[in-house]
Amino acid sequence: MAQINAPYGANRKKTIVGRGASSKGRACGRGHDGQNSRSGGGVRLGFEGGQMPLYRRVASRGFSNYPFKVTYVALSLSAIDAAFADGDVVTAAALKEKGLVKGKDVQAKILNNGEITKKLTIEGVKVSASAAKAVEQAGGSVK
Image (tube, rainbow, N blue to C red; front, side):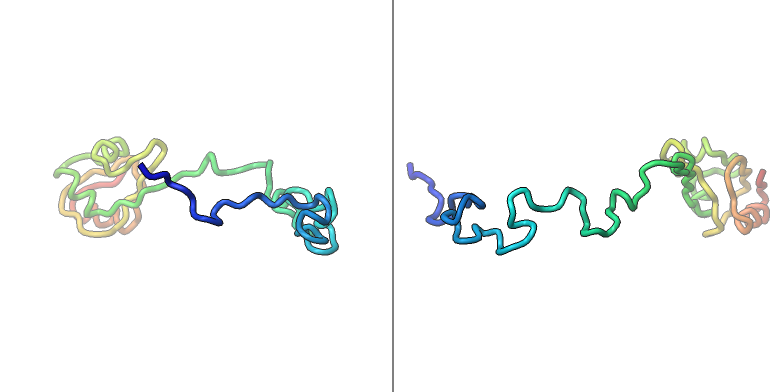
């Protein structure tokens, strides 16, 4: 069985910097002068050269409207027409049951996209004005 070895030069010893001139030449790999060449030099975490740092630019407290955000799923009239039978009542619960709306706090809005041929009653769901007109022309109603 052959021994697998790393090729020559693949593994090199770590360079230890800043331990005298013998470690890597006169400046020890730290450049010549300046803040980062000194021991203990360098800027603190998050420092951006005097520019207002990100952690101070972004608000970390205060009011957020995000918990009250309402997300709507846009549903076309053709999708409603395909999912429901003639004379059915379209409600938010019925839309979830048919799988047209997924998610816990997601609501639906029916838009006038496609055609509707069935008489449907829409209750408790947002409907655009043109979609409501199309539903009423097909013999249905919007409540």
